[in-house]
Length: 107
Image: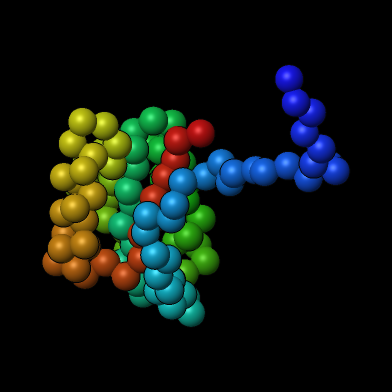
């Protein structure tokens, strides 16, 4: 059995895989939600029905003329049809004239 001396230096490997997707710049933020149409997207996993109702109340007080497209119009963003639902979103949001999205809410 031979003794190997490496003076405390060891070969190591990065545990993460190669990057598969390039990052993109984020869309610019809206200056205000006043007069904007906001879609609600929910994965139906944690009390979104309650949370979205509370958010609507609070946001209506802060932003005059804000409108909401209820999560019921989109269906779940999670589960067996997740891939299809998410693929259809850009066109659906554009067709509805949506300016912003609130997406939630699993823990």
